[in-house]
Length: 462
Image 1 (tube, one colour):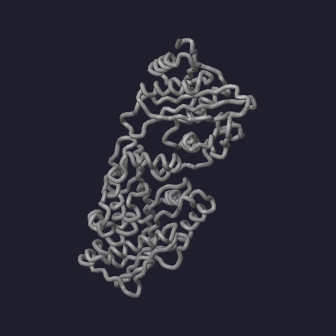
Image 2: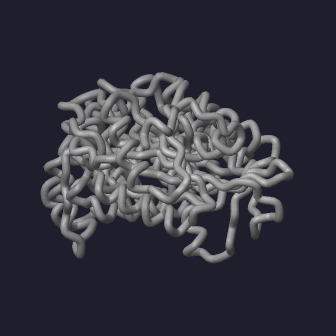
Image 3: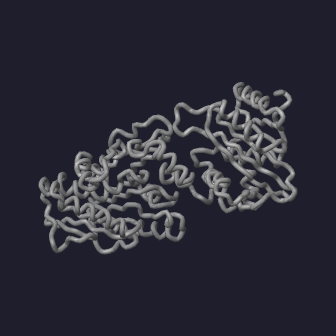
C-alpha cells in the first residue's frame, strides 16, 4: 500500500511535495493487515498531521478497490463533522476517477450513484460519508472513524458522553458481518475518549507519540518503533524540532500530552485542579515572608531531546494564611547558565526573598549546593534535602489549594503572565506529565513557608 500511496500523492496534493517517514509506513502496514483479515478492530493514535486521514479515509479505499482487487468492498467514513467525512470521500472519488488510476485499475463509478456523500462502483462497492452522530442506514465492510471528537467535545462532559454512547451503541451495528472491520484513527483528547473505550474493548493498537517515550509506542505488525532515545521525534521529515517546540508552546502541557504524546490526563481530577487556583490582581497587605524555591536540572541530558527544566517558583504567605504564587521561571542550560540565572533572579527578587535550594543526594549534590550558596552570598539561602516521594511532598500544597488558600498573581500583562498557563498545566497533569520540575519547586516553596523547618545544617556550607 505504501508504494501506491506515494504514487497517488501527486494526484491528491499536486502542489505539495510528499514527505515520507517510517511512521507513515507503519500506518500503511496496519491498514494492509486489516485488508488481509489479520486485524478486525484497529485503533490508530498518532499526532495531527501524520497523514492518518488521507491514508485511512482516501488512499486505503482506492488501494483495496484497485491493486488489492476488492472493488466489492463497501465503506462508511465518518468523523465528528459531516464536512470532514465528505472531504475525504470527495478526495477518494477524485483519485479513483483520475486518468492514472483508471488506466491501471478501470473501476467504473456508476452515474446514478456518484455524489460527494456517496459514490458506488459497478461491482456494488460504495463509499459513503456521514457525521459520527448520524450513523444510520447503511452498513459497510469497512467502517472508518476519523477523529470522533472535536476539542470542544472532549472538554464537555455531556458531548463526550454522547460520543461514547454513539461509539458503543450505534457504530457496531454499522458493520456487515463478522468479517467486517472497524478502523479508528484519532489523536487523544481526553482520558475517557473513544480511544479509551476501544482499548477496553480489546482493539489492536498502533500508537506513535510525537516524542519517543520508552514503553509508550504500541505496534501490531511490522518492525516496531525504531527510536531508542528519549525525546526523539516521530516524523522529523514533516515536523522538525523547531516546529514541534512551537507546537508544544502553543498547545500547553495538557494538549501536548494528549494530541502529541497520546497519553491524556485529566485537566481536573488529579492531585491539583485548575479551579482551585483563583487569580489575585495584587499582593494583599500583610505579606509575612517570600520564598523562591528552585528545582535544579544542572546539566542538559545528552540522551534526551526533552530534558528536565530548572524551575524556580516564587511564593509569599500573608498573615491571614493565604499563599500567593507570584511567579515561576523555568529554563534549560549548562551548569554555568544555571548558576548565572539563579544569581540574576536573586538580584531581581531582592534580599527580602529567601532562596531555597533542593540538594540532590550524594556527594555531587552536596558539592553543588555548597558552590551555589557561596555564589549567592549576601542573599538569604536555605538548602534542604528532599524527603519522601514527589506526590507526598506536593500533597500539603494541594490540600491548601483545594481549601481555597492558594492564589495566582495575575498582572493583566500577557507577557508578564505567560508563565501562568504552563505552570497550572504542569500542576494539573501531575503526576502523569512528562515534567514535574515546577511542581517540585512549588511544593518546596509552600513547605518552606508553611513549615519553615530545616533538616539541613546550612552552617556546614559556610
